[in-house]
Image 1 (cartoon, rainbow, N blue to C red):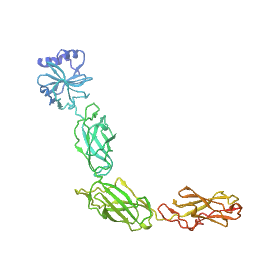
Image 2: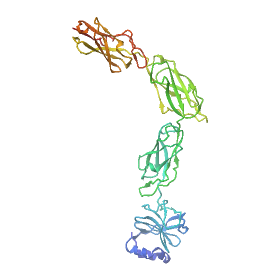
Image 3: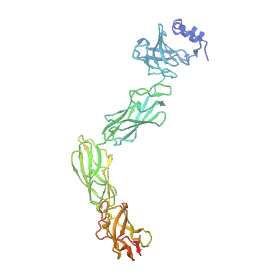
Image 4: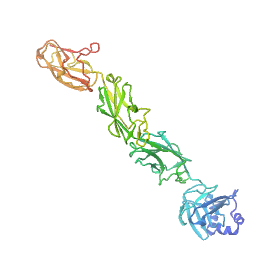
Length: 468
């Protein structure tokens, strides 16, 4: 319950009264800014480190509140007082002779903050506070690896998880900095909860960088807790880092250089960011269901190796063939630092095709009916896959007419319109059909030749037009 201010004044020593309650303070009491509550103990706060050394002392609260917060005086003779003022924050004043706001802290906290004090009319440096009633600043507990969750890694985007000892706010990319020789930067911050944030590091040279990447608080960070108290600018107890390894730069198609092929030997060019050693065929393996194997790895330079795949079922295989590092690879740089077993950023593959194309159908296109007296007949030729080298010389007219194939127009790489006209077609009365010419040289895109066989009758019958 409240205590009458006059009673409290009488209970304090005269020397304390004269220093603790100068005229301005007494007027404040009269105005009702002070309220008093009985103190169960002399709660002590220690002020230390101030440039004005006289400020450094033990301060006690005798149950006094000012503006709803505790009011403290130094233990010796109340020459200095510590209290809170609306719109300013916590202040340390000298009472006699009067010096206002020697040090202040803008935090609006229930009790005086330990850190974050600023110099106004005192001597630098500002003090720090300790004791049972001081309000502790929020602290950063940890920077932990999150995505990827393990290190080393060759990822080009790294996500740390920053955890604080209480809920904080004002958290943004500007509050963090990258600790690394890489040119990468903090590009995103996402709140997981009030005290946990995901911090993304990406860009710069990270996709080719090899080395350590860590996270720091920025020198300009302005993170605060819900009371407005600033985060302590110190490294966390748990401070994990990524060991990024981009020594392996690429697996690229070399011979042949094109993606689609039917060759029986594939050569990949493997490139590293620095000279490596201990490289041989056993450091690589074939990616895919093909039973071919890696048969050689030949150095083109200290950073480039040509890796050859052949054998197995490659000569008859249809599908994707790629290159991987073997799980037992022992490649290392010249300092014997081992290479991370991970895929490179550039990881090309071959699409192997050893199946010949086929003619699926020759159907009437224009006109679409069988009986016609048209002087120009258009057949639509459809193939089982994309084909090339298709022209009028690849087709022949089936029938007794002297008409010929006069044009071939591509509808898409699998479909072509073949025109028959001329000769005696204008007066011809009989069946006209379309065949593949015996000298046709149509192939698929990798060079597999089209067999000179008619479309299978059990699927689609070759169409004819009856002229007349």
